[in-house]
Length: 414
Image 1: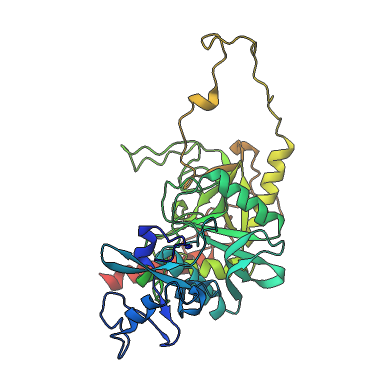
Image 2 (image 1 turned 180 degrees about the vertical axis):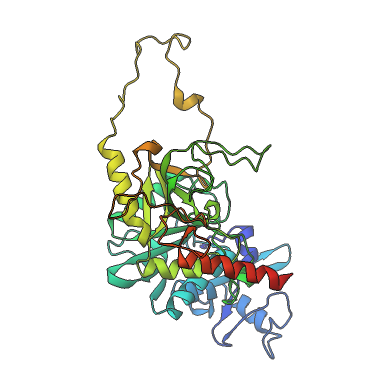
């Protein structure tokens, strides 16, 4: 055993591959010949080098560090209960090699390949311009956009993620944090998407779509009624005991809503991770932050968000930062109750956020040149009609075509 070396932990030893440079292939330490033709005496030769040949000259290196990080990291052999494992070469006190799961590596490789295939340069394990932030995947997008893809499959505190996100944002980088756990502490705390937890073998096949399940929002606006464009009233909580009770208040709302909870979501053919990354690199999707919650919006919805958000901020009064009460009184019974501590923990993802709301009577009905009110389309699109149909009812030509196509499709299926 080389006494001046510090081996990896047993868990890290188990999953490490090792590449033998003279043979140009990975070694299989479970076989007598190590998987190398005429390699029956290779193990003895490698063990004979201990204490005689420096580790960096023995020909054993880490293939993951070479392929993913572009570094030549020497390795040496360690025995555990009569079984040989490869260990990264480092001296006591040196920083450990960053070990990543195969699923983590597969996600980085997949996003980098997909980005390159769509014309955007992608670099794995790239440093930011300031030299401090290190990106899992750095994507050079259109019009100076720099996108950083960060798959986060392990647990990390929201505080640490906010600190990393702040560093990247100051460096002009738009981060995409990818979570698989719906209860991860980072959901909503940083610009994120949520994807299913898939094995590395599935992720690496580019034709396999990786669905976006959360983090992608749209803006919906209109009168809150059964015929309006909103799926449900943002002030009426969902009742699991009565799921068909949508409940509408009749007022006018502009809301941020997750795509899968929007009225237009059909449950199939949704956004994939590849499509999202490509559109974000092209500037077609924009990160937003509202009331401390982060997410992504289509670029065409971004202007609506800015208009509503600025209007809300103009009329918003800042609440006092110091609560009322005598702070010198240490008795907890006399101390004013903390609303923050008393409030139940709210799940950060998959929730609707109200941007603007006003009474329905404030909404001006559209009128024509003669001042007469324009009726709404009879196909419940929520917009003023543009013509009178064959039945004498107000409608849009496009809405009629959609209705006819839907009816003919239903007849064919029957």
